[in-house]
Amino acid sequence: MNENHLMYLDGNAFSDSYRVEFTQLISDYKVVNLGQGFPDFGPPSFMQEAYCNAICGGASMHQYTRAFSYYGEEQCVLQGYPRLVKIIAKFFGRIMGREIDPMEEVLITVGAYHALFCTFQALVDEGDEVIIVEPFFDCYEPMVMMAGGTPVYIPLKPKEVTGSALSSADWLLCPEEVASKFNPRTKAIVINTPNNPLGKVGWAMCSGHILKHLKTFHQNSVYHCPTAPQEAVAVGFQREYDVFGTEESYFRQLPAQLHAKRLKLAKSLRSVGLQPILPQGGYFMTTDISSLKVELNDPDTKDEPYDYRFVKWLIKEKEDSTLEAAEDILRQWNVKK
Image (cartoon, rainbow, N blue to C red; front, side, top):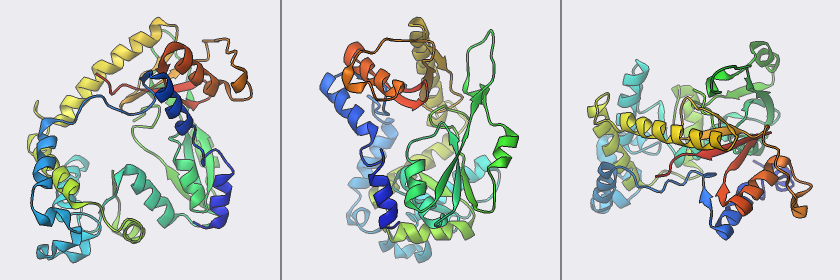
């Protein structure tokens, strides 16, 4: 990242994110916030207990992770608390059907956001192109640019659907269009599952020869993640590993809870004439507003895109909030009681 990259970003919307403006409006009007991922309920009790125990676990829980030299794995500690990288490798190794080396193929980061930032900074060079599938989460574009790369966009497009509800499964990539985007400058393509925001199906796992570059950037940016939270997450993953696939599994309970919330939100949206796009995964839902032609008479927003103006109108007039995801597409989160 150099001065030119920052100057470009400062001159664009990334410097004053629309999220900041909408968050202020939400606060001013005290509305129901479905636009951002703010759950109004706590984590499961076993995770709360694990975190409390980690915080009270003695001085070692409040030292650099690398202080745990008695593991004899000094090369691992900066990429994550040994207990955590081991259980993550074990857990996802079971799901993926292959052995994952915790010392070489797992990196603990400050959330998924930081994993993405480390990836772009470590792997993207000046002039490289990175293919981004639209619609996309808003951090991908500026992160690519901050690394000196050029975003190249390719849209998911909905197929014609009759007689059934629209699903994120109905949004498809054209193989020929994908192929046309690749050239000698292409460094990466961003694919996440479930897609954010459509829902089409924080750590990084990849081959050791790639992960070593992420480790270098990680070590020289945040150095390492706090030890106590890593201990708590390790305990939680061990518990989940032991009960995985049973009724006690949190990864089984949570999707069931979100499924019920998804159906309730979709029903509410349809009742006011909107077309929800049912997600295959994730805790968010997108809605097509192209058929809802609301007359927006706010003179202060007349030069802004319709989607932005609609969100502001929704906040001010209907005491509800959402976020713009693409042209005529809004995103809602269903992590509410």
